[in-house]
Amino acid sequence: MAQRALPAGRYSKQGGKSRARWTRWVLLAVAVAVGALVAFVGYRNLGTKPIEAKQTAFTILGDDRVQVSFEVSRDQPERAAVCIIRARSKDGDEAGRREVLVPPGNSLVVETTVLRSSKPPVTGEVFGCSYQVPPYLSTS
Image (cartoon, rainbow, N blue to C red; front, side):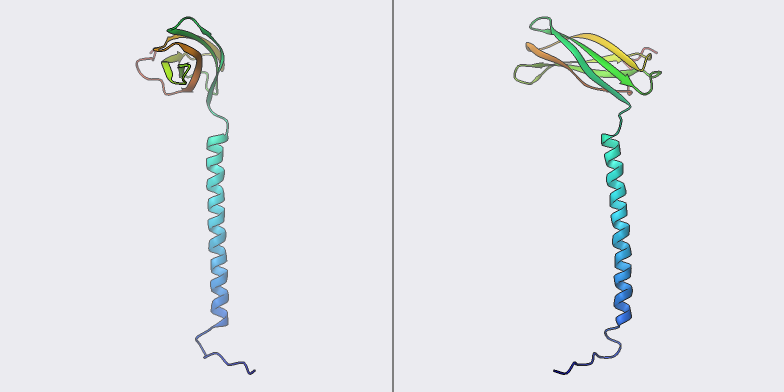
């Protein structure tokens, strides 16, 4: 079987190679950009946090109160922080919540607070902490 000749100028061998080369560079640039974005998001979400807290103990003081002790570690001890502490009832509902001011001081602080609950509490826990202290909690 004889091979047919392609019409001149319609199917350039060189044009296909340059397009493939250009496409390869574009795909490589997109892959690098996506990789950088994934690395950045992973670092922001999984990297060290500026302020962290963990519950160290809780004591049920009755059907309407719980005492919670917690430890706060922060990277900027000269700044005040606020931690949200909450009580949970047997059915898992949040039965009480309190914002606790953590004044400037050491990088590792242990705090204890008592909070009221609307249902009999079964646990007290730290919901989270932040450096964004509301004005009504500020001591200045």
